[in-house]
Length: 141
Image (cartoon, rainbow, N blue to C red; front, side, top):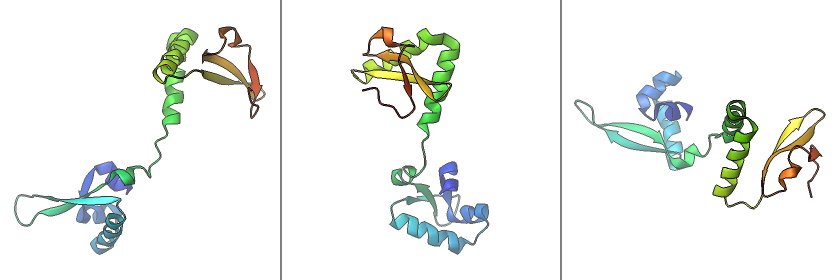
C-alpha cells in the first residue's frame, strides 16, 4: 500500500518488480485489497495491445495512513513564534478561535518541572496569560 500511495497508480507487474515478489503474489494481494475497498483499478491504454490495469488507493485506504497534523501544527507555531514573536502567536490564536467560533481557545507551553504556562488565549482574561500555571495532568477547572 505504501508503494501505491507513493506512486499514485501503478500496474501489478511494476509493483511485483518494486517489491521483489511474483506477479501472482501481487495480484492476489491486490484482489483482497480491492474486495475490502482499499484499492481500485482502471484500464490504462498503452501504445498497443490490451489495456493494462493500474491500481490506486481508495479514500478508505488513505484513512489508514497517519496524518500527523500535530507535527505540522507544532512546527508552524514554532516558526510563527520565531518570526513574529508573542504578538504573532496571539494573532494566530485569535484568528483560529474566531474561525472556529470558539468561545475559549488557549495555548499552553511547557516550562521546567512539567509545568504548563498559559501562553495565549481567546475568551479568557488577558491578564491570565503568563500568570496561569498548571501541572501536567491537572485540570484548569
